[in-house]
Image (cartoon, rainbow, N blue to C red):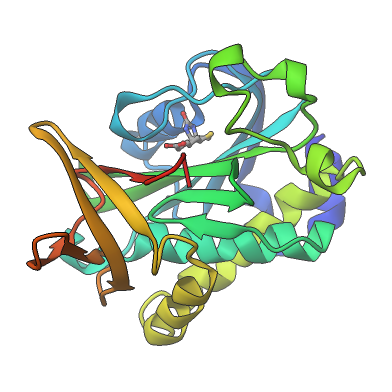
Length: 262
Ligand code: BTN
């Protein structure tokens, strides 16, 4: 698989920073360990299977062998963490670009970190920051459902999850998609600050949450609102039913459509 990815990638500045493992608990967790052992900016870790794939808000990410993409990227940005608030949005746009390049299908984005097609999730992103003695590291994890059939998903997520092969009727090459992701993430990193406004406009275009009536679920309860905009940090601007407007940051909340997951 690694040789195939490298063949699709061609000469690339991150090619010799690619690591591939058969099984790992979580590529994000393992890459965190590597970041503390001085792994360089641009290290990419891909696994064929995760035994403890993680999602946002303590959720799990089902990661069966050979069916999905489980990838994490290590960045060492030279800036304070508060300037990285848009990183998950930038990753979502890059992941949409990669999926579109390989399958012809452009997913939508359910704010903040899920790629969806129709009412079903095909991919998720988990961005984590690590403070090391050499400064901050960002670990960006991306999981994409590629070749699962409906019965490969656990019953409790079958309604809301789908794979690229279920949606396109074709079996996308996982190695081609990994290479496309690495290329798209390299461009994202190169333009992370200079291209921020353009990226946010692309995010707004792809974001299926905007304009929708949503439920905002926090530790202390659920409120209803209309999703209006994405601000310059990637926060969701909402108007509550009683009229007040607020910017919601992704760390705090889970968002649902009023009538389902999207
Ligand atoms: C979510 O659905 O909330 C995010 C899912 C992110 C899954 C990816 S798979 C590769 C990386 N390793 C993990 O443990 N999680 C991310």
